[in-house]
Length: 226
Image (cartoon, rainbow, N blue to C red; front, side, top):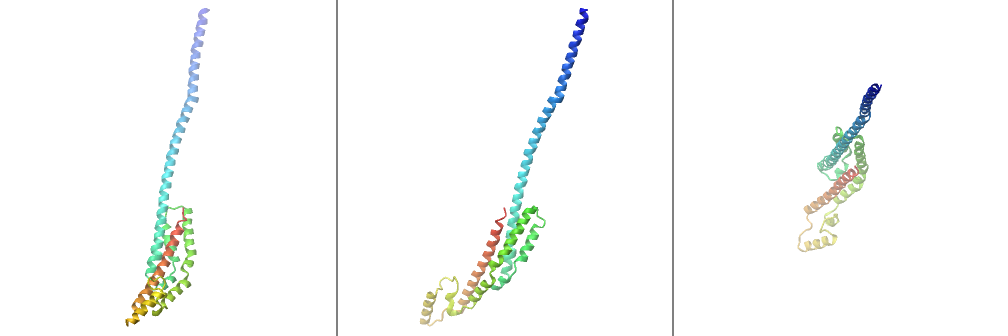
């Protein structure tokens, strides 16, 4: 009987060891391994998140550079292709006020942005910039006022040279002094050629002011794009 009890206890001991082994396997399989796998997965996700953030930052930086290049290209093209080049080809300064800049601005914008990689929001920003430029063109051109300035310069006679705007050394007092001195020396003054030259210089100054105001309008309008 004692022998049977020992055998029975021995069998129970073996069975309990097997049970413990199975329990350990179960615990490892359903607890430890999932936890380890979860930790590994979380680590991989964290690494991928960091990589994705770096990629997004690189893309954002490259897009910012691309956008700045488009701003620079469009601004420069507006200034040279739509303002300086076409206006310079018109001989008469006063006729330059009649030149319609709007079609050129629209054509340039469509050409530059047609196949651009800019998003729709930024494309709309460029549209707003052009709209602002066009809305302010007439106030800068101020055609009637500026044309009158050219006419005023053209109508100045030889004895009114001191009326020419911003011509250094030709105040009325200086003109009268030089005129008196010339008469005493028996020499006519001022010469007609010099009057023509001074008139052209005065008109050139007025034209340069007009161009500068147009260029400033373009540059200031593009500053609003962020």
